Structures are given as C-alpha cells and as structure tokens.
Amino acid sequence: MCSSGMADEALFEFLHMEIVSHVYKEQQSGKGEMDNKDRAVCVSVLEGMGFRVGQGLIERLTRDSPSFKDELDIMKFICKDFWTKVFRRQIDNLRTNHQGTYVLQDNKFALLTQLSSGKQYLEQAPKYLAFSCGMVRGALSNIGLDSVVTAEVSVMPSCKFQVVVQKL
Image 1 (spheres, rainbow, N blue to C red):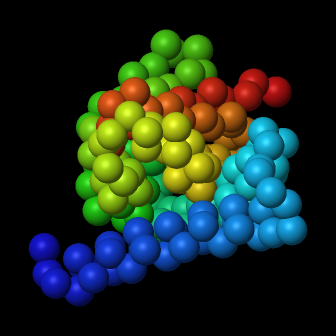
Image 2: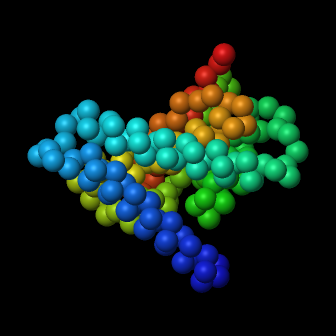
C-alpha cells in the first residue's frame, strides 16, 4: 500500500472520531449527564450523515457497473467493491438466510481498531458504528433496497453488520 493510501485511511479514521465526538458534545452541551434519549439522538444524527455519504458513494461506484442480477449480487458488491473503497479491505464473511437477512462480518473493522480492546470500550463501540450502518443503508437505498442496518461487537475490533432488507 502506498503511503498516501495509509494517510487517507488515517485521516478518514481521525475525521470519523472527531465527527462522533462533536455530535456527542453538541448533544451534551448545557446538560450534565447524557441519558439514553440523548444517546439515541446522537446515533440517529450519525446514521443520517452516513446515509447521505453512502448514497453519494454508491452512485459513483455503480456508474459504470452493469445492473445487479438480484439481492445477493447487490450484497456481494457491498462486501467487495463498496467495503474496499471505504475501508481498504473486503468484508471477511457474508452470511444470509435467503429471506432478506444478511450478516457482514469484518474481523478488523477499521473504525474500531483505534479503540482499545478492553471491556470498557465495548460499551463505547455502538457510537462508532452508527455512521457505517447509515452508509450501508444509504448505499442500498440508492440501489433500490430499503433496509434496516444494525451492528454488534462482541470482541473488539471484530464487528458484525446485520442487514435486513425490507420487503414492500
């Protein structure tokens, strides 16, 4: 990997951490402790930002692509091309129940590798996943798939993104 690629990666990770920090500080300003409602607002704001980024990215990535055969074809594109463009590596594992639910496993998720793997950081993980969930949802939305995207971390920095495609 060339050094500018590593610099881009570091800048993206740093920018992401700063965005998360800013959103949480804005929500907390003037208050003492944040409650669950405040945290939910923050997650929602970050998810919305990610959604718009995902929409824009997928437009550029699919401009010269042939149309997709089916839902699974779209998910494979997200795991390979989209993920590589954003995180410089492919998803490690894709699973599906063939009924609209997909689990994307990233064993070294870039936006979590900066956090320590201690248990105390596990509870911090969700706020660093909201933007990425939004990005995937935005990308899928622009390809014509309405979805709900959630993420869970059991061991840092490994992350599972669950995508549930909404059938109309």
